[in-house]
Length: 477
Image (cartoon, rainbow, N blue to C red; front, side):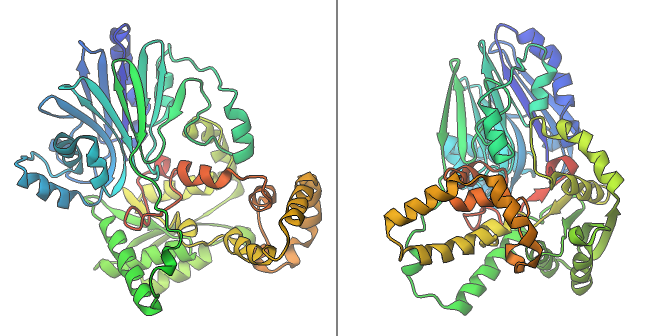
């Protein structure tokens, strides 16, 4: 991954220019290989970049990258950039590097904001168009790459992480009180909100134009409406399985394009195992795989990962983590996330990413598989419930719903926990309050929030992303 940051401030240009090197240094973990700056004093503009070199490791890939008064800072990867480059060359564009960054830049110069429709990948970037005197920010369809922005007192800031804003003393760190109930409900702060006032996450599938001291945001992509689509053609199971295999294989193959060492996070579960199997399928040498284990049997997946690694003949590395090592991660979390985040998986994710980064630069994982292929219990349990409920009159259903909402959640949990270990495996759920709210109607907006806001959950458009890359310990968490 890389780190980007920029500002537009006519009144305080000299201050922001002086502080920008310190601000971008806070993103060093995102891009340890190189850094660069671009300034336009007439506009009050500054752009800075931290680079993690993955494709074209030469200095030709340095950012900010400029062509004909158009400059870009970019974080991400466009998997179909070679195909787009060929089209651009037919239009007469010349290239000085082999990077996807330059393809994004020239795509904007050719098609404007419509270039976003052509990209398959994960990205967050900023383009300063000196010809039109406007700043263009964009984020990938499902929000894998982060992008924050702040606007107050005539100053516009944007960055890959909130901590970059904190390097500026005049950045107001007032807490946005509206974010607190959102955090307590969702255990994170959904986009577009952040913990700070006047500071926002750019929504997935959106772009932003900053021009004449005015911000405009627009959506460039929507989740496909597939209602009724499954009934529009006759399903041949073998044919569809082959199509799925072809799509997954192509998606994984595309994500293995790299000029640096590459591996995979392997838990032994279905999703990561499939990704690793497909990586091994298209790779001539053993894939590097990584997993962590715990002495506590109820939390240890390392034995399953080891069995998969042996079966696939990968070059496998595992690390067993002690409770002390896990606890030592907790004080680091505020500095990693910059705002409240309450998912306990942050700890093992950090540890396995740290292990992985010590051996490879890029790693694939199976995150998003449960959302794409309905792997969670709540998906099939909801379907079963709907089938049964349709025979119950609507007024009765409403009465039952209101009754369930009236029962204190703590009481329901206290009744459930004593029986959890003797229930069938699919009904032994962790974080019961969260799961209950998603099934009893407390959380009607949760589907919309999670579908649009989560950083790398939904993989709806089949060629957009079947898995995503983790490029360092910070990227993973």
